[in-house]
Image (cartoon, rainbow, N blue to C red; front, top):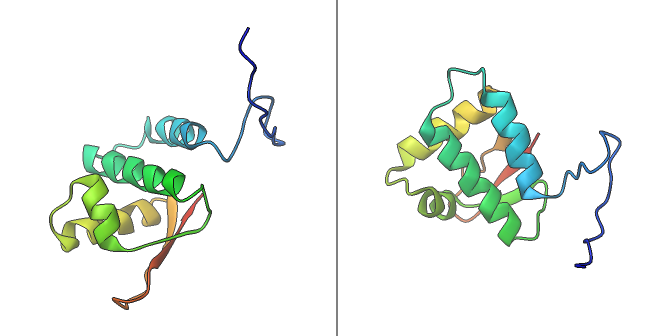
Length: 111
């Protein structure tokens, strides 16, 4: 029988773990089920952010450059990236603090 990994159980309920990308994605998926503002591009961007977060060791907040996220989300233009990341922030799915400097990464929180 395979040994189960030790999971930190939060106050939200048994088996719930804020640190697992899958749990964050499931919460996002449940939240967008009735939100008709969310498109495939929003979902792709959120999934790309989760993948980057996981590769960085699951920090919250995480510091990323737009070109990193754009490559992971297959976005070509910065205007498209900024439009969708700002919308995710305005809709309450993330907290986005842009740096406005090319040599400093922006800060993104998962809420």
